[in-house]
Amino acid sequence: MESSPQVTAGAVGGVWRVSVGGCWNLDTPWPPTADAALAGLADQRLTGLTLTASGLDSWDSSLLVFLVQLVRRARARKLKVTLDLPEGLKRLIEMAFAVPPRAGAERETERGDTLERIGAAALALPPRIADFLSFLGDVSIAVWNLVIGRSRMRSRDFISAMYECGVQSLPIISLTSMLFGLILAFVGAVQLTQFGAQIYVAGLVGIGMLRVMGAVMVGVVMSGRIGAAYAALIGTMQVNEEVDALETLGISPVDFLVLPRVLALTLMVPLLTIYADLMGIIGGFLVGTLMLNLNPMEYLHATAQMVPYRQILIGLVYGTLFGVVIAIAGCYQGMRCGRSAMAVGQTTTRAVVNSIVGIIVMTAIITIICNVLGV
Image (tube, rainbow, N blue to C red):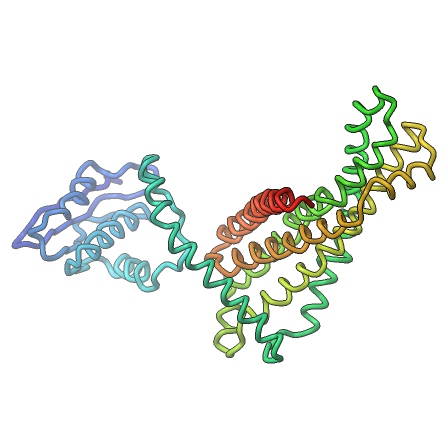
């Protein structure tokens, strides 16, 4: 006949003795004395913990969880732990503490109140900034080593990264940029047609796309497509300990994984920006000629007349900086990924969010600088 789980606890000569018995299964809650046994370990006069079994019937992982919590609390207080338990149960407890948990593998369940979380976030900020600056320093050193011919970056990795973020991104860049040119033209036409000035749609679309919007569209698309891919790839390599293997072999992960991707994205995003500008102008051209009944040559002539060439250079500055931001954000998050599958997903999300926020901040800074300089 099965009996309910039983726990008896008491201090004997400075040792907290806990005895378990009865039948333990997941469908039956712990007895009230179990919480008292756990709380009793807070007594500062205790010097040890002894676990025994008396009349123990069948048991499952519910008993193991209870005993592991007792042992963990005792170890946290540096108490001497004695296991006088059945051999199978004793071996499972020893296995539970044989290997320390890997960083990032444990789910965070303690959230605390709002003020506590704000304080913890504020205290964690300086180390994160220092760590990010350290990563930037490593990348800068890798770039310098490349300049002086001491880098171990493989050219085929660089070419492969360029193909991935350049050629393979053309379809999505074509679609999004052309549609955005269409949207710009439609929005401008709403007001300009009221004054018979629909020809200025050409200037609106041209300046808007070439100056900033083409680069922003490319940056947003590349953040989701490439920045996330970089974070997921390098993060998965962290989980599989491939990055550790590179370091063990004396190969710098920054040279091998980060540098080719940073250079490829920094080079390809400005080129994709020019392509996006062209596709956006084509979108505006379609609206101007098909919806607003403008003459095609008149539209193209108006675009050439209203859009100064320096707008292209400004757009290239945006694109270059966006490429650096996306590559750094993706690679940094990947290199700092935890050692679990869940950490890879979190790293990918952070990479995309950081990239988009970085693009918006960088856009604001460059726009203010251009406004101050009058360009």
